[in-house]
Image (tube, rainbow, N blue to C red; front, top):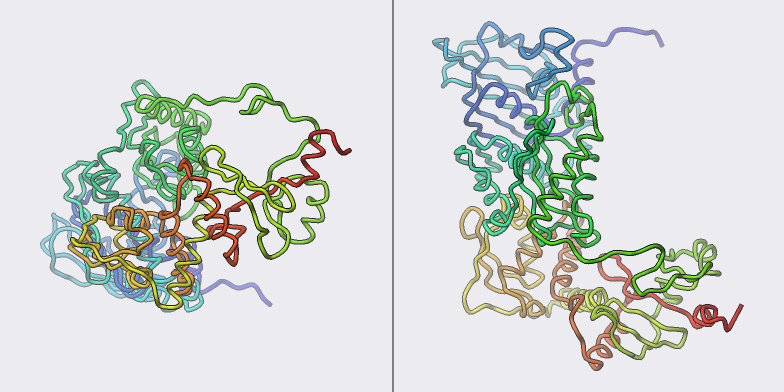
Length: 574
């Protein structure tokens, strides 16, 4: 096949794939252009998760009529002049690719008006082909409408996520930039409904209250000024009592640019070391300010990845600032290991038993089970009959079985019991729901509001009766009977906080996931003392479960210490 130059529209569509990954990518590029233009008000409108329409309106400087046709050409920018400028970037955009890439895969309409011109100008770009600029009226600033994204690249449409996912990504993007630019008034409208708004009064804690609720915003710790440091770190960190089950609430801005950086995340997580439970992550919003030459933003077309000239210094400063602020608010736990001696005061002998996850498939059991002394999975498909012996650490049940000693995680075991009871009740349509005498109101963040709205039908099947009560307020009128011991608003908020981003799963899968979260909140907790009769009752209920070995989230409910293992440890058997 001969070598030939690609047509301009084909080359543009290929290049656009690096910049325009999804509708949220379009929103990011357009909002960053508005911020670079000095906008103090930015309004974003989205339809069909951005597939049908993305509109961004700002009151920035605008584009002169003589330059509007040049603005949609590749590598046309007002932010760079020389190659040396790449090493001292002080704007969010600089590549000159955004409008060209967006126009190559959509129907783009650009209307702009500068303060020095009597009228504005309008330009249409379809599939990379530009029309002629025309005069247009309108206030100072720019209006950019992006319709039918990827209409001319159908293969790309197949890889787009669900509308729900795209809405969440766009919401997450706008709320983050609102925190970084509190003096800019943001307004986001999705599917004809306003989902987020800020006043632009500069109060970041007020925006935190909009995102996470008043109570969380009140508890967030404001970082002190890092005087004399080569890198300025400011922002807000959550106390150890506020945590999440994933890293999505670790937010970092470097010189006003939202980035994802594993080193910064590692620095924050290390700062919280021994202050959070395993598997929990803090809520953090950090803003780093440093000389532009100390960071390379010209790494990837999306500009979400950067490189630091001295990554170790950045890591050290962030870790120390966050750690010092945390210890100033909460005492460090009195917990340490010395040498190889464990918490019980004994040193394991060479070749002693190790507690760990033993895979369930036959090949791995053949590898590990023969010499293993502790198993987290049980042989056979059913759980043996167990006799409760006692409770250890107010968290684990000690039980005797026909083939050894068992330690049962009371929280995980109760989760499994409640989950199967709840799913059977939903299946048989005899779920018990408790109606409240007075509705209980709960306020949610914009992202949580979207999640709850999308899952109201599923929550209804699980015994919740929830109704909208304003833009971000809901009222709980009924709740599952198994949650009757919890405050209604707190129970709903706890379930919503555990929602994960679902990529258009099957309805049954969503139902099971939400049911698992409901049961997680309702089950007995670690630290809760149970009587011997309560322990035995929990064991009997676990024995009746179809899948007693794990909780609904996949954690093991029990481990087994075999008689052979005990005899080896006490020297009774070689």
